[in-house]
Length: 292
Image 1: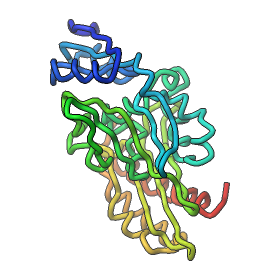
Image 2 (image 1 turned 45 degrees about the vertical axis):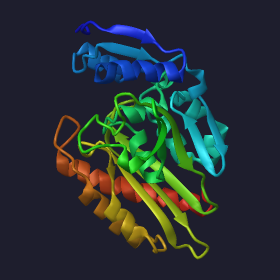
Image 3 (image 1 turned 135 degrees about the vertical axis):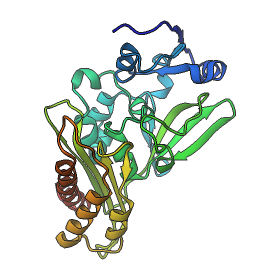
Image 4 (image 1 turned 30 degrees about the vertical axis):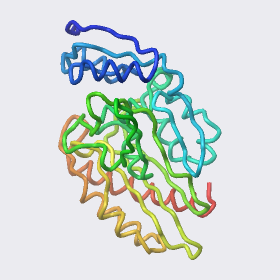
């Protein structure tokens, strides 16, 4: 199909992008990588009056640590996240995530911010950011505001708490402590496909090996990205042995909300959440305790 008519505006700065969004409000859509938006336009599932192209905003492309926080510019390409020595060395869960997003052609252009702002429950970054406890910087006419990732996604698919005149400009992830580790695992029908199910798990251990922080995010098993809060609570204070991991995995599966579709029946997806959660938590434990 052919998209409906729209005006095309190229933003030369963040301020100009925000001014355009403020002018056009809900009639505008932001164009970054475009791999999610363009198919919606072609099938007329989205019909904006204006596209605001932000691809020339090079000051939104960066990966850096400062003040105990990882700062990722919203326009950072997936390939840059995947290739970053800092990410591979310090944030392997993010490297896990980036390398399974679609295919190399898509990753060369797709952006981290776009993956999150699109709020597709099948996208991979939302689950990982939920597990990590990330924060997102939204910039609008009134300045910047910080949104905890668990407050970013609404109860409806493809919706966020971003205002129509706000632009997602940065992702902030707490720097890892000495005994911390995470992993993202994804089951797909073929390489590059959306997940049948995916699980991100992240843990922080104290000196005695007890869990002081646990984060579990689920991909494509509900209408929105899911933070498995009850499963996380089961892990807190534990020594993360296999019995506890199995219990948390069962709870994560119970918190999933899958539906039957072409990727499989709901019961199968729920079972895969349990299996992937066990594997992700074991990998997180291994990384937290100095394993590969």
